[in-house]
Image (cartoon, rainbow, N blue to C red):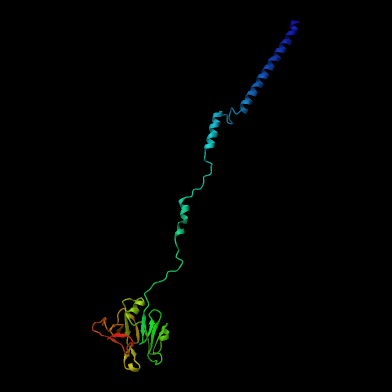
Length: 226
């Protein structure tokens, strides 16, 4: 009978041992699963303290944070020209003042806008102011653009002399006289010219050997050095 019981007893002990090992193995699996599920190990196998340091580092990093665009002085300086006042009106040329040209005994013309015309052969209108030289191009007509040095300055020729150039045949009371063919401003009158616009009271002819007189035929209504 002892021989018959032994195998049964050994079988029960062996089964007991097998169950013991199975239970221990299962408890080990549960322990591992619980440690993993509670975060005791990181995703990469690191300790929890390492994960916390990594998380802190990620939270403090500003590498990916958007940086606001600075309002630089260059952007602000784009408006620096706003205070500049633009001159909308064109510049007005300021030239010398106008003056009057003596045109015969009683007429005067603008030195800048008109021309005195002496129509020697006319008995109805011997003197008139015209705006074009074409209106003073008849036979024996004399173009008079000045009567004093002031007229030359008005025309932009300060310091010039008003000169009467002879070569024209006189009419009426001036018949047989060599009278003006043109009167204009020159840097200096030629030796054969007559300087006009002098002062009879001051006797201020450029040539001190000449006398300032009132002209009767060369340039009626004006003064001349003779």
